[in-house]
Length: 211
Image 1 (cartoon, rainbow, N blue to C red):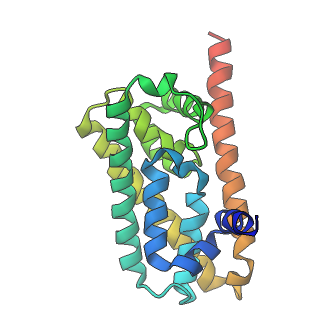
Image 2 (cartoon, rainbow, N blue to C red):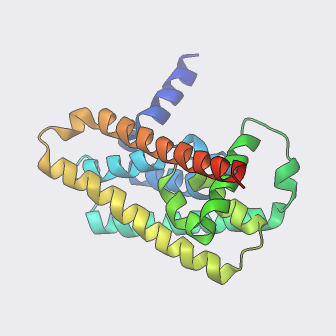
Image 3 (spheres, one colour):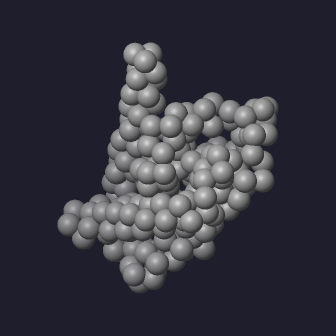
């Protein structure tokens, strides 16, 4: 029971994940969250912000530009994995039963987001928890052309990583003892990202009701 508690404590506190596993674990989690079905359990925005902050305070021993380029490459690669997963599974995704690793409601939420934003959902979805994991899978299942997908994938990957990590780095530079309050920063980012998801779904549902 204690091991399970510790596991969920790590999921909630993104800075602890980085302190425990360093750069290697950070890259693995970013890859999982951006392209593997069960990756939605991680809060990527808070994780990247925490990585930037810890990098500035030297608790994460890596050059900021090395961090940015590595995480960007992994985020783009994760989405490519999601795209080909969607290509492979296709329509079977919509008939797949719920499991610990897959929740159909997450796919349905992402579908609404995808309907509203189209290809741009790959860019906007990078900043939205849950959507970030499922939108590349849905793009593959919807037969989006690889060229179009990869354009939005690369643009979204750069915008996401080069926004969240520098924000954390800047916070670490400007706010005294910022690392001591990193949990509050991470929580605020997760709440904002969840709010964006809820608002986007509400707008799509309201639009359908008025048609």
